[in-house]
Length: 288
Ligand code: YH5
Image (cartoon, rainbow, N blue to C red; front, side):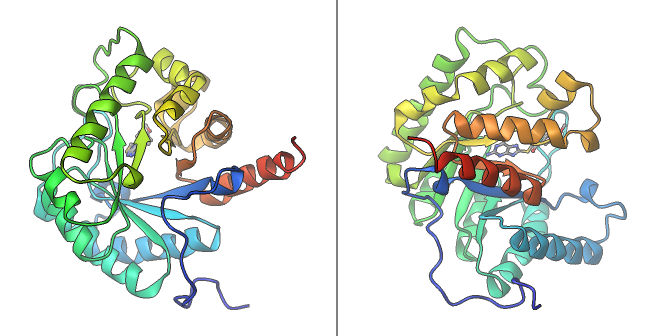
């Protein structure tokens, strides 16, 4: 049988921010890292072709959004230049958009990368710095692209040092309200926004599990909530598992996040996550 991904479909695409109000609206965001440390030989050609293969596989496995990142934001990661990030991400964005009918999110905090991503047809900017870098609000305001505003305490290099909150939920809610206000003042309508509490970004293990337990509280802002927990230290440190042993823990966390109101789940393992969500959907249809 011909692969589902060999032809760009002409049918109309789902809007990236779903307006449905049941489990059908849950979307899987597949992670596509294009940082040199994500490829053993660091070679450009290998990187590009391996990335395209991963895209095809994710689409076949039922991904809704592919999140392309050219900057490593793991704790302790080094900075990359805007040009390096553009060179990693934009050629891939162009090819994916010409070959496949799939929503693409670009994981970046740099205004130069956002600007190029918008030109070449990205559907969402996923910014772990929530458009706080200079010029980002204006560039995004001049487009009609969706934005994920993520909360982070501190900066990637040092954020896991000694994170502290008065009340983690209230502090993050306050941050979201401020960023939503800034967006609206710059002309970015609320209906373009997604909120993300930023699991692992300046949070202790206890903070992360408190966030997961109380995730429903972010629904009070009436915007879609994204949860990115896949393979993170909150799974590894809880279970004492290496990065490649975190699938079961990640799936359990993804399901809990959905039950707590998250509607976009950012994951490495698309096929397994779609299966887990489909089990949840099968149950949900019998709930009154
Ligand atoms: C996120 O939560 N995360 S990049 C460390 C890991 C595994 C994965 C030690 N970008 C998020 O995925 N964007 C990243 O194991 C994100 N939400 C949004 N919106 C970090 C990451 C990771 C880090």
